[in-house]
Image 1: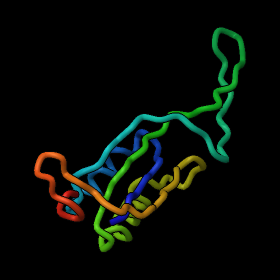
Image 2: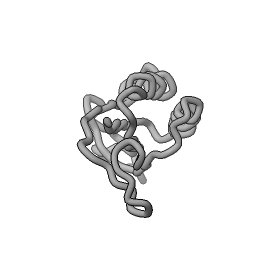
Image 3: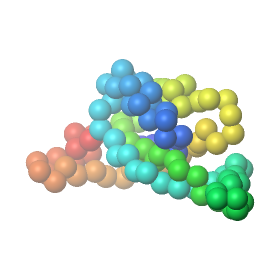
Length: 112
C-alpha cells in the first residue's frame, strides 16, 4: 500500500475529486492548509497599507491505495490540478506498512 499526499490549489479540488472518482477511488481525507514554496506568497494592499501574505491557502489530499493504483491516481491528480502556473502544488508518495479498519478489524488492502 502507498499513501499519496497531494497539495493543490483550492479551486482544483472538485476536478481532482472527479478524476479520482472515475478511477474508482472513493476514500480520501481533505484538509485546508496554508503554505508556500517557490511562490513565496505575495503582497496585498489593505486600507492603503501594503503587507505580505506569506502563507497561501492550499488543499491537502491524503489517499491510501493499493500499489497497483498509485501511478494512475498520481497521473489523474496532475492532469486535473495542473494550471501551468507557479503554485500548482506537489504530490508525495510514501509506503504504508499496515492499515486497520476499526469497525471490522480488517487489515491490509481490505481495510482501505
